[in-house]
Amino acid sequence: MKIDPTVVVLLLVLLFAVIVVVRAVRIVPQQTAIIIERLGSYSRTLTAGLHLLIPFVDKIRANIDLREQVVSFPPQPVITSDNLVVGIDTVLYFQVTDPKSAVYEIANFIQGIEQLTVTTLRNVIGSLDLEQTLTGRDRINAQLRGVLDDATGRWGVRINRVEIKAIDPPASIKDSMEKQMRAERDRRAVILTAEGVKQSAILNAEGEKQSQILRAEGSAQARILEAQGQARAIQQVFDAIHRGKPTQRLLAYQYLQVLPQIARGDSNKMWIIPSELTDALRGIGTALGGVPTTDGDPEPWVEPGPVQDAFPAAVLEDPRDALAKARGQVEAADAEADRHGAAESPEGPEGPAPTR
Image (cartoon, rainbow, N blue to C red; front, side):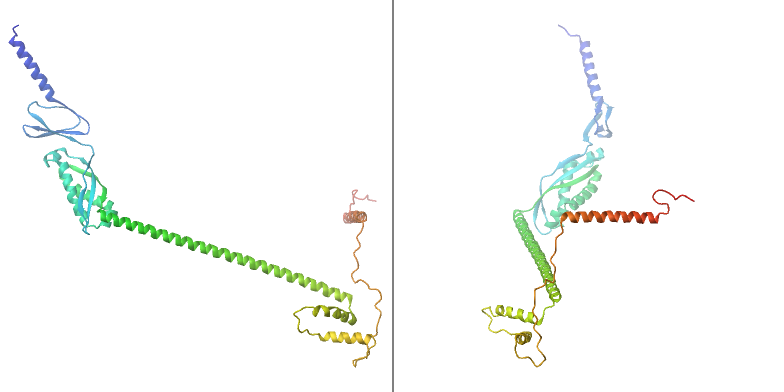
């Protein structure tokens, strides 16, 4: 079968047209920039949307992602000001703001950012000791971000945030830090134990103090009540003696009754007879017919006769009589109140008096 040359030419023309259309139409997605070069030089930057290119003249140089990107760098050995080597792992958050500068100002801006981060990190950490490095992460992050943002601005890259993921000190420093932390915990435990013992002793002392105060107050109250009771008993005895009007003979007789009780104790080696007792005995001897004293005639003996009780016995009243008496008193009081009310009112209980 013989193919017509005209058909072959038409097919080739059609294929060329398809290729031209495909190369001429370019759709750019969101948050993406495309650098276009025309005949080897920069032409323009394509943003999101539909664009037409000149086939075989315009060429795509690079696709740039305009979103914020995250890159993590491997741990870098850094020497502190006290000559200790620590490993620092960093994370960088950056965003391309000028695609043209990111393509033409530096060959690989990510590698450039990494090397710049390492250099800046060593400069910053070199001025700090280990303790400042471990406790000053925020300050280190701020210094890194400021230096990197100034250096990468001409590359069309903006450093949003720099974070230090980990700071790994040497093994010997780790052991020393663990020992220090253990010693600090032990010291705090000893301090807390001592504080607990102190508080316990204080509370025990306060409790003992309160108990002693309460016991003293109770003893004082008991002594006061006992003294009051003795005073009342003495007062009652004193009043009873005065109401009974005892004679000299009765007092002497009471002395004689108490003498055996005074000499009854085994430990009593010596006891003293009061002078009142001798006077009482002298009065008894004179009353019984003894020799009169020089003070005067003896007191004549008087038969005591029947003993009369100075305190009359209480006679209990019959409950029924007491109830009747109480009712009578109540009725009398009511009647007297009615009379007083009628006397004070000029009209009386039945209204005003008739006028004559």
